[in-house]
Image 1 (cartoon, rainbow, N blue to C red):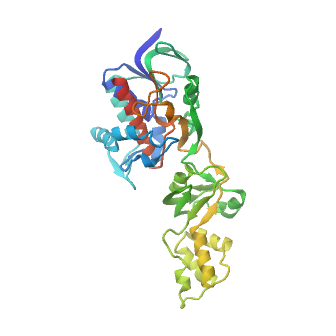
Image 2: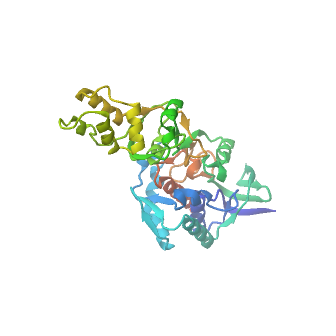
Image 3: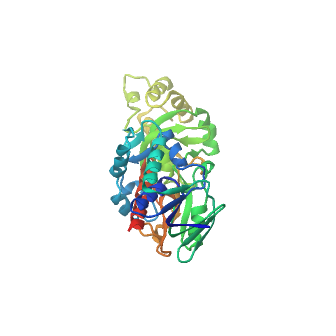
Length: 390
């Protein structure tokens, strides 16, 4: 027997649940089909388990897309303060970490519970372990899972991207788009650690655990945050941020001493210019192990002012060419996805197929690190939910 609803939503993540509760609040009969055994699995592991649920300084400039204007409408109609009002309504304690990033004080489960309670109150039905086997479209949409059949006038695809396959990420959303003749932009891991080349791995791989503040630059973008050396390459907020802008084979430049003229003490006529004093100065700039390794690998040509100036410049312009990334296993999000030219920026509905919507990470809109991807999930889910309600 087929179960009939007004709206079917594929995926019980941040975007899907937001869309569900908004549509249901306005009287729509909504069902959410989730292939996993629980809702919000990616929410639960986000932000180190504390969920960086939004960013107070969210703007379109914090997003990457083939069409940078697409996200503007949704982001303007559902702002961080709107979601913050929900957090306050549910009495969830939170704090601002840095740069407008808001985290739960307790755990990410608070956000999942918020969404679950809002959906329950609105009458949303959630079906877990619902693996979709077929989607057909005639007058409306017919969805067959491994143990049930559903139909609805509208179908919302909120299946997420390819990042973190161990919690269930699949290509399903992109395959469904192509089934309906909707273009998909090439996908790649984003907000992801970078791998050293074999030479850089030999030089720096044993410094795993060393962290320092840097300015990471690539393709006209730059981020000043912490960098972490790993056993395989580089990670930390600065690296995750710039990774979204780096393409394979492109050089990455790192300023290891932001806004510091670090060789100035060595140019003091009262300070002897030698390796011992250089090491002491470097230790004041970089972590000790990194400073000592840098001095071994990048010694000054000599101790003249000209050589010291060149040496200073080298520390401000450490250039590496990553061998690649850690891939979708370690990527926080997926860049690329359903082509925004195929969708209405106001409603997230397909231009080609009436009643078919795409929201969240499956769409070619990718946020920077710091709560922006959640804000896109809330905003795009809200936009589709409002459209469905009307």
